[in-house]
Amino acid sequence: MGLLKENSIYALTQEDLKFFLGANDFSLELAPIILQNLYKKNKRTKTLSEKLLSALEGNFSFSLPEIKQVSKSPDGTIKFLMGFPDQKTVETVLIPFHKRFTVCLSSQVGCAMKCSFCYTGTMGLSRHLKGSEIVGQYVVAANYLRQELGQKPISPNIVFMGQGEPLHNSEEVLKAINVFMEPLGLGIGPRQMTLSTAGFLPGMRKLADFPKINIALSLHSPFNEVRKELIPINQHYPLEDVLGALDELDLMKRQFVTYEYLLIDELNDRKEDADELEKLLGNRPAIINIIPFNPFPGSAYKRPSKEKVESFKEMLVERKLRTMVRTTKGSDILAACGQLKSKT
Ligand code: SF4
Image (cartoon, rainbow, N blue to C red; front, side, top):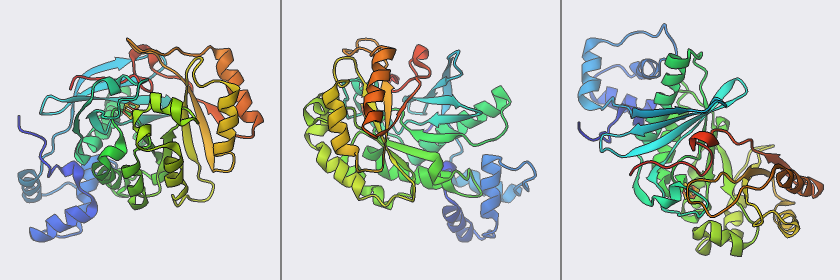
């Protein structure tokens, strides 16, 4: 098997396809029909001529990641181990939410950020994923929903919260976002996508070039000293700089930045933490998302009790901070936040 070529069909926007069609004497009007065929949004889509099909197949790879393993949790979460032709693998997770699914995509094989609470961080970075490999995870997961579960073709929402720091691979992630947004392809709106960053400042500075997707920051502590222990890159990119970069984002009306707060027993669940969070976020368009820590094999931290989670939430609400507690899904199959790991 050859490597997934850079000229994968899954890396192409309508503009790219038009460029190809024009250069090969095909009508530019075929571009949307190719996209509709590729993503099977409309059963009545016109079929493509043999000549065009063979031109496409001769120039582009159509290969998708291969499902190596599927794990299902009784709560409806489905975790895939997806493999690429170079034998690298990543995990992709489908999370049920009301009547639809959200797909959690990986952006790298492993991760260089080494967050101390994260299973992926123990792997180190093996390589970046290409835009087409990020789109490929989505296509494979959505096909699985349709074929195996008979789901209607409602596009799952997307979170870039799987393996990897998406802004450490910002160029390829942006390519994937542009493909996701193609109206005649997958047609996923920017507000249906959320990118989560650990605060990788060089990548955050590129967010100005991104469509207006939702942004989440892994905050986890309002104190640099504690945050540095949890997210080592905080040594180079301290909180004040990271929050400053978020302040510069051109948000839409009523758009908030989500601050993820992994609640760890006896580490960041004190009154001082709530007071400092109020100082930091009280005047910012912020939603705090409390995520009770999900243990993984060998992890040094403990999950707080339900009562402690509730009382920390109360402290934040009293301080007029918009706060939610994320219900953990898929922790029994190591599919929850910070639990993803695959062979590199
Ligand atoms: S939490 Fe995210 S950024 Fe940190 S090591 Fe894990 S995958 Fe990487």
